[in-house]
Length: 438
Image (cartoon, rainbow, N blue to C red):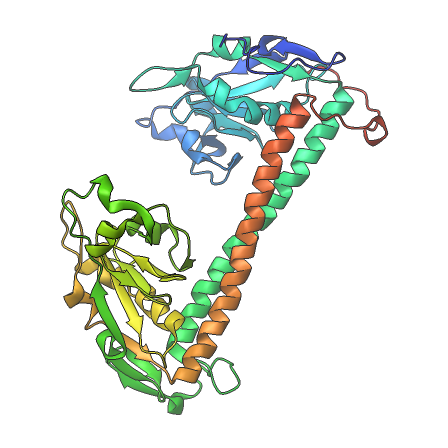
């Protein structure tokens, strides 16, 4: 592939240009780091950023500010509001648009565009679409970076100014949907954490509502080995309400193909970790008849708990599965809520993780899990608490699925719109004049 990336893209529409970046960019704004040994350079009013301050194509947190003296006496420079910021070394490929005037480190390049040729927001998305190609220019070993000359050679499709604006507007709308969905996911996560704390300290009454806090109704609570709990609750060991057994896989050597490829689902710690807190029904590995004979199966509804490497990650089996001794299967007595007990174990993850020896391979064992103390409401209350959790979890999962759909939609649209594969009808493209070059 050539440095001009002409082999990586289809031919542009006849009314579009295909220009090297040097024809679009008036100048590249270089950055630098004021000396940390000179106190007078720091704690000023101008935000100063590095590549570490980028997150999801935005500058999320400004950690440091510099003074006017630092700007005058060091190699940093100011990138004006509205200009594109590209991380060109140490974390190459992160992109953002400056939401305010900002000073930059040597890891960042500011892009000052020819406004009569290209719109900042359009090039912002064009860079996102081409970023994997641009990252191929990466050079260096200890500190990777893009040579600015290579960036200037890179070609972009340039439609009319009005079509650039329409493309940018469409992609901005999707970005706004992604940002809004991301905020809702974070909100639900916060709600879920707060709700879990309340549910496991106050429980719910006969109507499914949280009991009043202990300060307001002390008569509803009692002291226990786990602190204050509702009077109707007990504290029991996990082994009192469930069968707790390790998985098994005694095949030697473990990678012998004769043990795999049959009809019996076989999961390992990574599968549980990747589905933490969720019902697991899919699998990437199966056991043959010989594999089945040296392993152990667990029925649907079993809580799978990792006890090696990732400690106390949990998921619930949706189907019968086999697993090795790095996972423990917890089969809850039928009168109790599997989800409630799973939540109890998951909330004890920090405690169980702390019990694991600090060695190359962290692990716990049955002697850590079986005597684990759990709060135990009456079965009916367990199921009410589980239902509340499932409702919140269902909403969170829907939002995460929507987020994935929006991201896939954006990726496809970026390619199609930015290469002219899909054109915006003229009646949807308002006539506009390009601004004067700055």
